[in-house]
Length: 211
Image 1 (tube, helix red, strand yellow):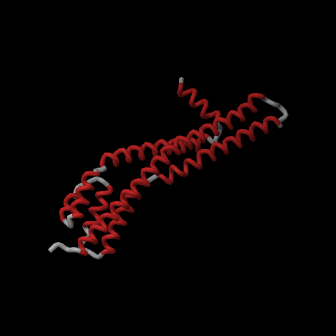
Image 2 (tube, rainbow, N blue to C red):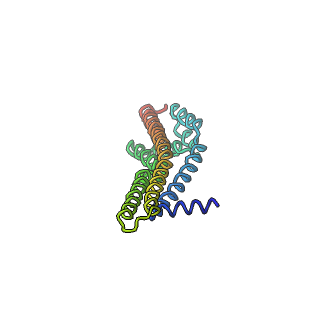
Image 3 (tube, rainbow, N blue to C red):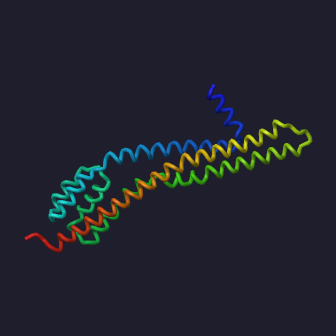
């Protein structure tokens, strides 16, 4: 019963409903995948281990800090571990390693955000296109020799259905997009803060070697 109503509603929306349907499917898939990914990443965060690593570096014990960082799934700790593996090299190598590792983590975290941003803009435009085509069909029927009320109202209904669906997809995509963007910004801040702390502490170790 419900399926028949939905199908009838979909068909009344006109041909523009097909790209709108594709946009809806992509939106659901992307939002679901990103929600699962961020939930899993939140469970991997280990601030206590990060504190232990920074404490070891503060005591000028890079070896202990590297051991503490091993095997962690925390993205911030992974970046630090990657940087500590280059402590024996030049300052540029350490900084480059931290930047490279942070870039990889941010790329993973920002995956599909461009798709969501596109859907936020594309879905209302598709709805607007459906509005235009629906009104065009309604006005063409008004100008025809045989005026049919059902044909005119059908065109107006097509316009309204397409607009409502397009706006619905945009709203559904916009809220998660802003949320995931905020999480990405926070992760970037955490990575930059951790990388700066490691860089400063490692430079302090090199400047004041233990006797």
